[in-house]
Image 1 (cartoon, rainbow, N blue to C red):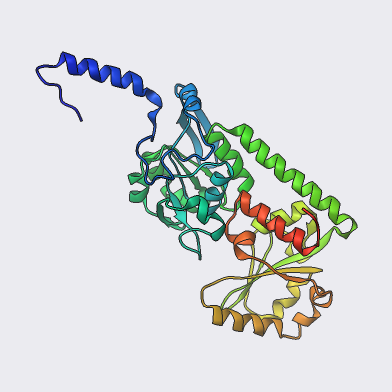
Image 2: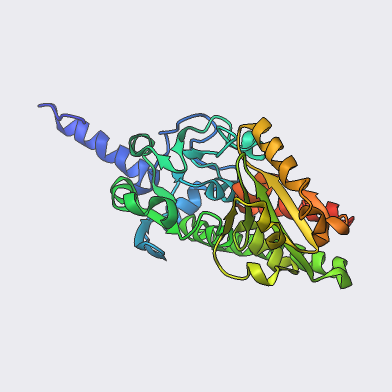
Length: 335
């Protein structure tokens, strides 16, 4: 980038001094995409922490292999919405994010924290060129979304991954490792555990409650088993109907004859899609069917409409707490 002249020695001396002052830990500093995301910190990684760990190389094992990370990354690109969420839980802003599904560019609850941060495309198809242009120190990915392009991503920057987009606890742990903030991650999960214990204590004898998660689309319905919300409900003391046991995400149902498969003491229901008129028409067709009125949850007046972002799409630590907030309100508990 610089060319030595015949007057050389003075320039060489100046360059040596500048290199010594800047040190090895400059990372992405000075390459900010916007004023809010330069270092990617609110509380963040301090310069002292960065300098202290610059010489160390850490090997992080993850679902797609082993990745070496030098020092404390300052420029992080996240390739799924759960990682966007968890980075903010750590108090650190990524320098690049994927767009939120159905609520571009980001979900409302994260708009303030992620304002001005460039997007690198959809979670389902991020742009390698846009990621490269951001000059990340590390990329946070998932096997589910990014396995096919993992090698290309790794050529851009060290890339680590969790298995599924909804594995928010694994995301908390992985990002803690990446950022050299494992103690912070431990604290976040301990705070969650305390809230879970508080909820279960306050629910008392009302638990366990057999629950189904039902999703209506424009032309069909879905029953969710053990995805994001399903795992959280299980941790909170809810159970599933025997027909819904299993580790798969759930099942797509087209026939209203499948309504009995939804049967539970409580139903948590959310809608998905952009064609609101078609969705509402479909919801009406299902919920007016005689089999719907035979559901235990219908008879007990225990059907709750829930927020799709908190319960399905966001997939992060903050959204898990928002889902738990919803449940405190539903059951008239003080949080």
